[in-house]
Structures are given as C-alpha cells and as structure tokens.
Image 1: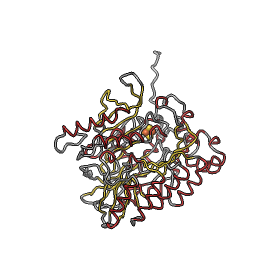
Image 2: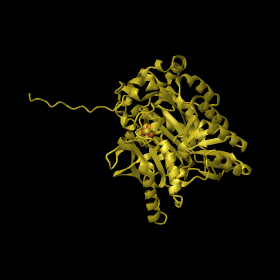
Image 3: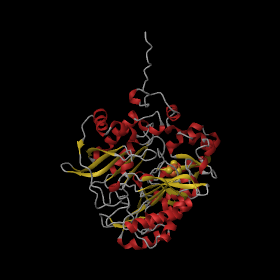
Image 4: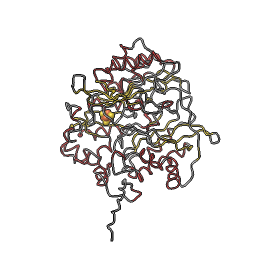
Amino acid sequence: MPPTTPVKRKRGEGQWKLGHREPLNPNERTKKDDDGLNVRARIETIYAERGFDSIDPADLRGRMRWWGLYTQRRPGIEGGRTAVLEPEELDDRYFMLRVRIDGGALTTEQLRTLGEISQSYARDTADITDRQNIQYHWIEIESMPAIWKRLESVGLMTTEACGDTPRVILGSPVAGISAEELIDPRPAIDAIVERYVGNPAFSNLPRKFKSAISWQQDVAHEVNDISFIGVVHPEHGPGFDLWVGGGLSTNPRIAQRLGVWVPLEEVPDVWEGVVSIFRDYGYRRLRHRARLKFLVADWGVAKFRQVLEDEYLGRELIDGPAPEVPERPIDHVGVHKQKDGRNYIGVAPSSGRVSGTTLVQLADIVEAAGSRRVRLTPQQKIVVLDVPDRTVDRLVTELNKLGLPADPSPWRRSTMACTGIEFCKLAIVETKERAIRLVEDLEKRLADVSPDVPISIHLNGCPNSCARTQVADIGLKGQIVTTADGEQVEGFQVHLGGGLGLDAGFGRKLRGLKVTSAELGDYVERVVRNFVEQRTEGERFAQ
Ligand code: SF4
C-alpha cells in the first residue's frame, strides 16, 4: 500500500453552534468556569470586606469587567514597556469604573449623584467616553457596595459596562425632542436593556457587542456591531434600517446594511436575533477574530440575513431603502430649538474630561434654568435639554464659566481622546491631557483660521482605536517613534482623511507619516493651513 498523505483538518473557529463547546483560549475558559455576572456577589461579600489582595486573579483580570471594573495602570510605567510587562506588573491597586448610560440619557438627579460619587470615591475624576458612559478612576474595591447603592438609588448601573457582553446602547442625544425625528427610538433601547442586559443568556458572548439606535445619524452607526438608523419606507412609513458588522481596532470594518426595514416594535426582537447569531456562530478561538465583523465579512450580508430570518426570527424581514446621508456630521453643539418650542444646548468639555465637581455644579445650574434633563453624546459632549427661551442666555453664560462652552472653537469641538497612558494598561502614549493642551495650542496658532467644514482630530493611546482613529480627518494612533537624533519618544502614526457619513471610510495611513508628541501642534497646523489654502469650493477634508 502506498503511504497516504494525512488529511489536514481545518481548525474550527470555536463556534458553539458548530459543536465547539470546549474553551479554546484562556478567556473562554474563564467565562466557562463562572459567569461574569456572578462576580458581583463576591465583590460585595468577600473582596470589599477583605481588600484588594483577596481578589481571585481570574476575577481581577476577567470577570470584574462584567460589572464595569478594570484595574487601572500603575503610575510611572512608560509606554515602551506596555507590551513587555506581565499583566500583574501593569496592575494598580485601583480601578477604573464605567457607568453605562444607555442612550446617554440622564436626569439632573442622576447627574448630581454621578458627581457626588466621583467626589467621594474617585478623587473627583469623571470622563465622558465616546460611548456615552461616565468613567471614573482611583476606585477602591472597598467602595463598590456603597457606589452601587448610590447608583441604583437613582436608576443607574454598571452591569455589563465592560466584558464580553451587550455594552451600553448608543442613542441620539436628541431622541424625543428633535423636530426632525419621525419615531422616538427610546422605547426600543429601554426594552433591550430591560430584557437582555444582565441576562445570563447573553452574558457570555465571544467578545464585546456594541449597539447604536437612533433616528438620526449621530451615533457613529457605521462602526458598531449592530445599528438601527431611522428611515422612511415608501409603503410602511417610518422605521429603522439595520446595519451589522462594523468595528475599528486593528482590523477596521465599516458596518454593512442588511437591506431590511424594521418597525420600532420589532427592533428588540431583531436585536436579539443578531446578538444570538453572534453568541452562537461568533468566532471564539482567537480573541482578535472574535468580533461580529469577522463573521459578517466571511458570510456576507445575504447569508447573514438568511440565517437571521430562518434560524432566529422564523419569518422574512421586509426589504427597505437606505437612509439619506446628512451633509455634515451631527454633534448637537450650540443652541437649537426643540419640537416643543423649548431649546437644547450642546456644550463641549475638552476631550470629554470633566470632574465630579463639574457634574454637581452642572446639575445645579441646569435645574436653576428650569430643566431636569441632560444627555451625553458619542462625541464626548453634553447636551442640556428643555431649556425655556427666557433662561437660555443666562445658562449659556454659566455653562461657559464651568468650562462648558456652547460656542467652542472648531478645534475643541472636533477633538476627542481616549483614556491613554494615565490610566489604561494597554496604552503606549499619553492622550487626554495632551489633547486638551493641543486644543489650547491650536486655538492660538489657528486663531485666524475658521474652516467652514469640521476637521476632526482623534487621539488614541494605542492601536485599539477607542477614540475612533481611522474615521477621523486627522487620526492619531499612539506609538513610540524615533526622532532625527535617534531618541525613542512618544508620538503618533497619522491616519489622514477618514470619516463617517458622506465620507464613511478609513484614513490613509501614509508610510512613515509619524509625528512626535512635541511636533503635534506644528504638524496639525501645517495640515490645516494646507487644506484651507488649497481647498476647492465645497470640498470636505476627507475628499
Ligand atoms: Fe487604552 Fe488603547 Fe483604548 Fe486608548 S485606544 S483607551 S490606550 S486601549
């Protein structure tokens, strides 16, 4: 008998539906060993009592995320050492805590509570993230029972704010008040949170699952795992267009339309169908391929829709049209009329950085102006709703005094930054304070320039792109760069000309286009002046 060539078996991707139930990597093992949702009981009864050193390492670096907790970076570790150190060497004894705020919607009572928690337990830190969360730092494990008690007393939570779970749902900051809106999508967001967040049926996904639901295109829907965006069907009327498989990080992908129209009341069921596909068919072997975008890319939208209809919904979806793309990005900054005649005021903290004290003071001045509602935005901004005409001017002045201008410079308005090396264990460079200083610098350097199109600048501390590197006009990805003198310093790889909306696509990563942090102001000034001088009429930066 001639020798036979052994048949090379294709390795599976760890998809549950295809029978791969045995964990294929340590993250999957941790999740199989115990549901991340169960860690809260241990925090409350053991870890908060006995302190940091009592925490099981699998909880510390894994399951605590299911309740919004990550250890923060130990201060003083340089970015060049991030990749070579063991996780325990990077861990501080303090935590970052994320509070999920679905749709970004807060009452002033909730806002004040968020501020007071920061003052009491988080050294007055508070950042508004580009997913409409509030993020604290310097949290001690001993404080968590009291923090949850305070949050839950006003209807807020940290449940599945991080981890391999359905994360916070992005929603329009002007949902329910905008004159353009034909359906208010908040009932769908509320129903999804009520039914599925903290539900063990969806607490072990292959990785995180990001959602966005809005009538308007103001929630970066192109880079979420699932998005529902408002559209009018010629026969059925207002409803939502379904997008799946977007995401950034090191393998960015723009979401794709399934070509279906979903009425408001069916949004939660369709959401459940898509997240179930992700849970059952999502790749679990390799962590970096475990996002929905890889499955969508491999299947294509036709197969994805078919599986959704046949295996999860048991019915056909209705074909639907694409929504019209707005001419400009929508950020809600400034004073605008609501449909009820009152006003909403969008203001710009620099790069989303505020403080507990600012949040408490904000709640006070908003209430004094006759409003009880604010919203956070996916652009790290704040919108105050329901302001009567008679108090608009006074409130704008007071907001300005608080460092929250309603008429910010174009640079402040369009700059975002991720957490960066100050607190993030994956970071290579500093971002938040650098972005704030860059904005101040650009306000002086470019005082004579007022572009009539927005030019977005997004600073990220590493390739993970939490502040959306690839879809900025000027996207900055932190890395160590070498100066002309051969010195290794903090700097950025530049991605130019990315965008969402009309210009949805990724910035060009020009070979060798890297700037040191010290050169950043010079570089951005040069790029902006070149654009403004050479621009043809109507041209946008990304064109
Ligand atoms: Fe951390 Fe990198 Fe995300 Fe910035 S982009 S918050 S450095 S993981």
